[in-house]
Image 1: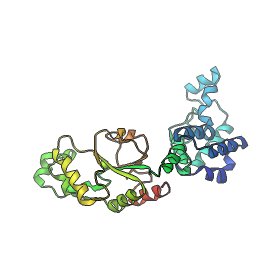
Image 2: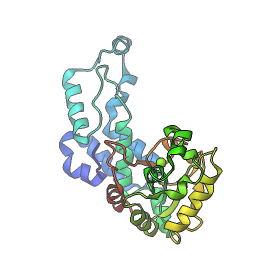
Image 3: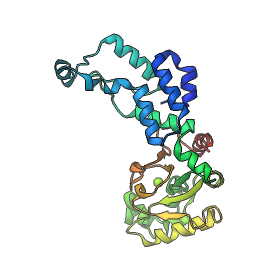
Length: 278
Ligand SMILES: [Mg+2]
């Protein structure tokens, strides 16, 4: 998926758009509506083909349900050329979108264009966007703790339950680039730590607090949130290496740390992405 602004689409991708679509995009560009509204409007203009099925005749509807695209090859090729240029998935053989990549693309365009209502309201209040940062394997190098526990504990708890070893979280080193990354975030965003501590390991709860006090004393002062329900945290970005404990249902942008193909393999890439959005 390409990361583009609305201005960039209007300048560099005109060949894929009709005059009518260009006009509609210009209208969207002029009006700073709410984030979700703007993303939906943008989707309606850029990926109109995804609602074609609503206009299907009875015969076309039956063909589509059998996996046959009722639309002409010429139309499908033209639409897929545009989708390929934006880096979103091509239409499936039945003419349906294969996934939600076009929706995610539109959200990203709105985010990068930085002309939506919520952002203007934050600027009006001189407030910053909210970023949450996970601990294990984002701020903290989990493996460095495993390397320091005794062989006896390794056998007793096994690889699936190392997070239950008493005291293990106090032994962990910072993840590469994490301290510098968090400090940069805390200057440019309203930044909090959002982590989960093992329910069966009470020392994990206090060790996480002690780790934060040791490594991010000023920047994360009283900014540690421990929960098994990350989806309840309301903010703009969540930097997390997993989707567990509600991270996958976070309402803002999930910056999927270390996940292949997502573009956020390390802290440098995360900061390069967020630098454009301050
Ligand atoms: Mg984690």
